[in-house]
Amino acid sequence: MENNQRSGSRGALIVLEGLDRSGKTSQSCRLLSYLEGLGHPVESWRFPDRNTGVGQMISSYLANKSELDDHAIHLLFSANRWEKRSLMENKLRSGTTLIVDRYSFSGVAFSSAKGLDIEWCKKAAERGGYGGERYEQLEFQRKVARSYQILHDASWKTIDAYLPIKDVEKQLQEVVLDCVTTCQKGKPLSQLWSS
Ligand code: DGP
Image (cartoon, rainbow, N blue to C red; front, top):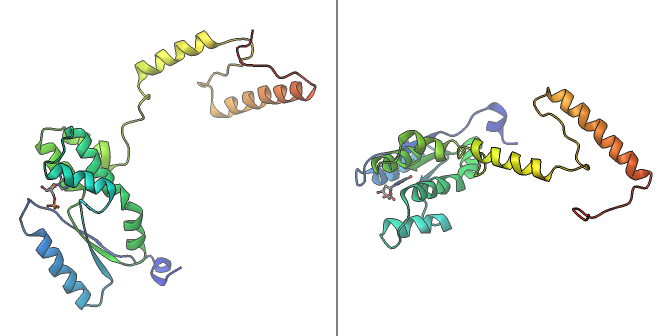
């Protein structure tokens, strides 16, 4: 473990945001030289990072060589940042300061300027959640529950998941132990939906 990790010292995350051609890239270079001159461990990054696979898709979109839905491109920009997230964290923890030319604020600012909901832009990507997975919708879950009822047969043991977690755990242990014992006693294997 490096010394600074032990002491809690870390690098700074410096993000430069602003309109296109407002001089962020030039300023990033200058800042880099300045901090290097002072002897600080420092790196200059930029987003979008066009070197990755996702970055190339973004680059092609920005160059008007491909078309993408506004939400899809928003998520790609975000994915491009996520691609570098653990490296970013490691660098910062190990004491390297990062000067980043655009980050998540550009992500939300540009997409919301196109008309996407600003809260969606923040939530959909930057917090690392996508508002639940594809199937995690109440109406859809109701349909799944109906399907389970149709599939229910004598081989099922139902446990009420509304019970306190400890009770669910206990019931489950009992049911499973019973099954294990029955199988140990020689209950023959059978095929699912064989009768
Ligand atoms: P740059 O390489 O900094 O010139 O950025 C390219 C363009 O992409 C620029 O017009 C700003 C825009 N941009 C940068 N990041 C994002 C983002 O996360 N989302 C969207 N929608 N646009 C972005």
